[in-house]
Amino acid sequence: MSKIEAVIFDIGNVLIEWQPERFYDRTIGEARRREMFATVDLHGMNDRVDLGEGFRDIIYETAEAYPEFRAEIRMWHDHWLELANPVIDHSVMLLRRLRAKNVPVFALTNFGIESFAYAQEHFDFLNEFDHAYVSGHMGVIKPNPTIYQMVEDHCKIAPEALLFADDRPDNITAAEARGWNAHLFTAPHRWAEVLVDHGLLTKDEAGL
Image (cartoon, rainbow, N blue to C red):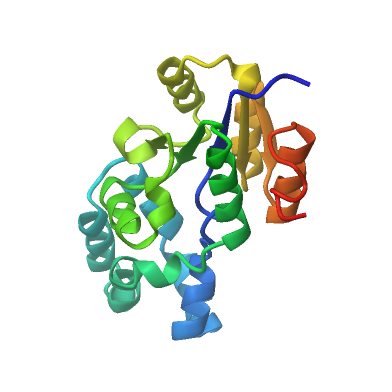
């Protein structure tokens, strides 16, 4: 097993739950939500934000293109903190335990420029990375191989010495193709076990 020199966290569904459908089911009802998501490519809209386009601009532009869902689409911006909830506390603890042991911890996240800055104001742990690789600033999103190469080029750490957690199989596959150690995140205790297996934390430190 390679010696790990840095741990990399995705953010959505690893540190903060990101389930927009759940928010809309709660606020407008499942039937209306299903109709809207079938009509409007909301995740494609969000990808444009993650690629660096304006947070409010893109969402409001999309809302105007679908006036029958204008109010609901604007919620993606106006109620964004309610979409990005709750915090996954065990994962945050793991991030902080790693940093307390002087293990470099990075973020690699598909996130907009303005939305990430907004999130940093509300989630203090998003300011605690040794470096945050944010797609909006990089102009490319996972799983494009370029974003992984950009991380390698910046941090100067060999791929086999990186350990990455992400909730999307395609993002994991792309990282592994570059030689990274990668874990498909499904639950924080399983990620904790991986960190223990690599000798980065003890079971007690990992909350196991």
